[in-house]
Image 1 (cartoon, rainbow, N blue to C red):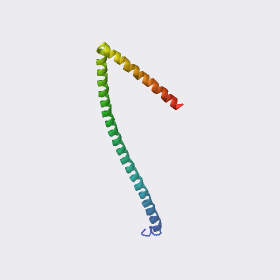
Image 2 (cartoon, rainbow, N blue to C red):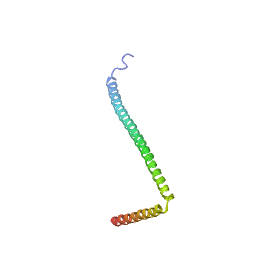
Image 3 (cartoon, rainbow, N blue to C red):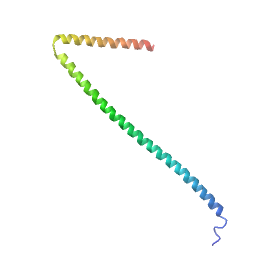
Image 4 (tube, helix red, strand yellow):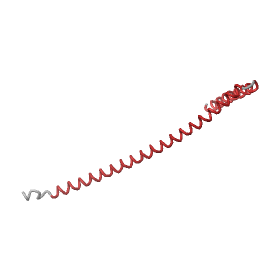
Length: 109
């Protein structure tokens, strides 16, 4: 029974080489997965920071719009002269948008 492994040395060496090759292949795949997981984590943190900044930007825009609406409401509730001014400004804005739409549509065609 002591001679049972005799002659199998080359097979053992070949299996060891195959195991080392597979272990190296596995190690490279694990390294790639680790790198990919790190990149995903970094991207998620960047996206969270972006969303936090967007939230603060929306809050500031909401504050700006609410202040504008409050001033507009005050102007509408005030006297007859302000209403006339409001009509002129509103008409001017509508005219400006129509003119801008016309120019843009003409440039595109």
